[in-house]
Amino acid sequence: MKLFLRQHPYWLLYIVSVVLVSGYWAVWATDRYVSESNIVLESPQISMPDLNFSSLLGGGSGGNNDMLLLRDYLLSVDMLRKIDQELGFRSHYASNDVDFFSRLSSVNVPLEELHEYYLSRISVELDEYAQVLRIKVEAFTPEVALDISSMLLREGETHMNTMGQRLAAEQVRFLELQVSELSDNFQNTRKDLINYQNLNGLISPTGTVESLSAVVAELESSLATLQAKQTMMASYQSSTSPAVIRVASEISALRQQIAKERARMAQQSGNALNTLSAEYQTLELKVLFAQESYSGALAALQSTRIESARKLKQISVLQSPTLPEYPVKPKRLYNIIVFVVIGLFITLIMHMLVLIVRDHRD
Image (cartoon, rainbow, N blue to C red):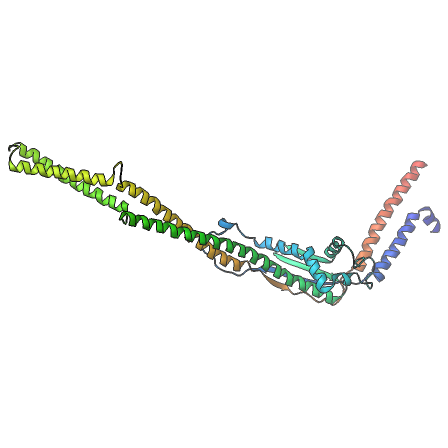
């Protein structure tokens, strides 16, 4: 056996490594306690108006996206700072009671190294099928594992609510400003329309034009009737007869009245009704547009206020943070067996390579 080990020293190295690593995992490695919790994010179920507010300011985050945002925050440097300040993360994980390979190298390590160690002890994974966040916290005492896990849930809910409320508040402030401006615009356009009506003494020039058109049509009908009567009378009466003269006078009066009414409706200069009607319709359209814009802004503001309530996120705990009763890590026997198998596999490969080289030399 000794001769074999002298000829193949890598087997000796393998045996020594197995002894040392087995001794570390079996005796020296510090117990690690794992606190587990499962959570989901829920929002208040509030009915929304039919207005598609997302088309105005952009849609909000979906449920899956919110879960990912929460996961990133729980694993962030900001979360690490809060845990370290409140629970003493550095002092616990850098304790001298912890074995050299498991503990934090120093309480004064740089933040980047501390965060890397934090990620090795805190696991937050999203179960996309069940839409559940599964949180696992490893610590060297059950109480610390439970405290960190509980703080993650508490701070995560606070952060999600703060972020949602801030976004909703910004949207509400923006829409309140728009509503104020649109309200002023609506009031101004309505005043312009009323002033225009008062200035011209007309409630609706368009309606007046329609009434005059009906009057002109009626006058033209009467004129046509009189002209036909005049033609008939001219066939059997003298042009100087009183009846013919009376009809001619009536025809002349109707023509003058028709010309006068047409001049009121349309002429090249002056305040013709067609010009007044066109200006009135322009003002009326401005009022209608301002009213619709103001109404839409009010509806959007109400929708946003309801949406701000929906942005409140409540963490529903499916499994409360557990207080570990026994250490589940490290997996001592498993780690020893894995090391022995992998080491044996590597050593056998080296042994085969050595035999191949020797055969070629011979």
